[in-house]
Length: 188
Image (cartoon, rainbow, N blue to C red):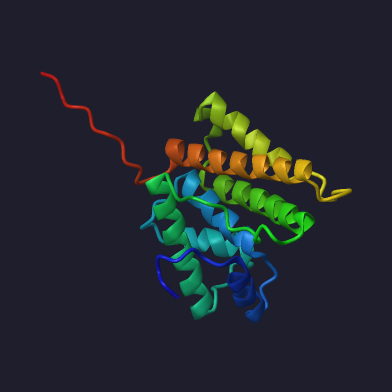
């Protein structure tokens, strides 16, 4: 697997199933994003403890799964730093809309869990981010049953997806570690 290649949802799901994990790929990605966006630094090994506490009953992951999760953590961090390639790890667009919405709801709940473990001072966030966190919380409650898969439903899904990306990016900009802030020259 090329280290720069985009992670594949189905391949990651197969790896989780191989290890009898009861979490989904969307939940894994959501927790990782929440931890990073909440302020967990890339080189802080505590993120693995938080991850295991949230998704694996405090147990250590098997070595090949741990390697894949570590790689995913690094990729998400790089994507957020670059501010151009960040995408949610979700089922492909050709999967049923109900399945994609279910994954989005799982991602949202997992994001909030990871974010909440690291970021205890949401009251210090901008009003925009506080509203965005409320929106993400609301997405966890969206009805997952579509009467029909039509263009309108697909458009609504894309709007929610983009809103989640924006929320994660905004949270990273406000609380993420390692963000590049232009330094202002000191005037004497």
